[in-house]
Amino acid sequence: MCCFDKLEKDLFKLFPQIKDRTKIDYKFCGCFGTTSNNLSLIGESDIDDGILLFISCGANGIINAVAGVNVIEDLLTGKQNPLIKIFSPKREV
Image (tube, rainbow, N blue to C red; front, side, top):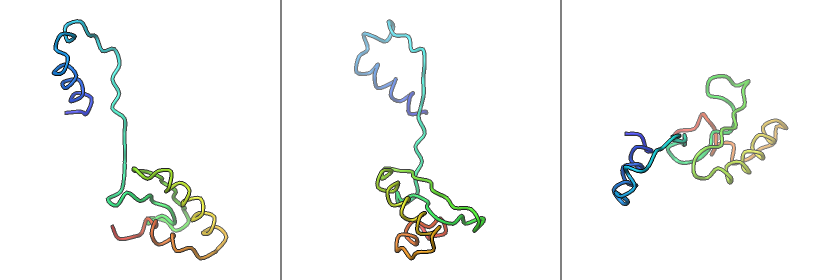
C-alpha cells in the first residue's frame, strides 16, 4: 500500500462524512531516500575513483550539505579532512 493510500484511508476514517463528496484529482507520493546511518554519500565513488559523489539525502540533509561542501573542497585541493572517512561512499555501513 502506497503511503498516499494509507493517508487517504486514514482521512476518510477520521472524516467519513466527506468520503462521498470528495474527489481527489492528483496524487503524489514523494520519494525520500537515505542510508542506513542517515549520513550522505560524499567522496570518491565506490565504482570509479575518478567520480566524486555528493548525494545529500536523509533526515540530516542540511548538515550533510554543509559538511559535503567542505569534504568535496578538501578532496579537490588534496587537504586532509576527518569527515572524508565518515561520509565516504566506500565506508562500511
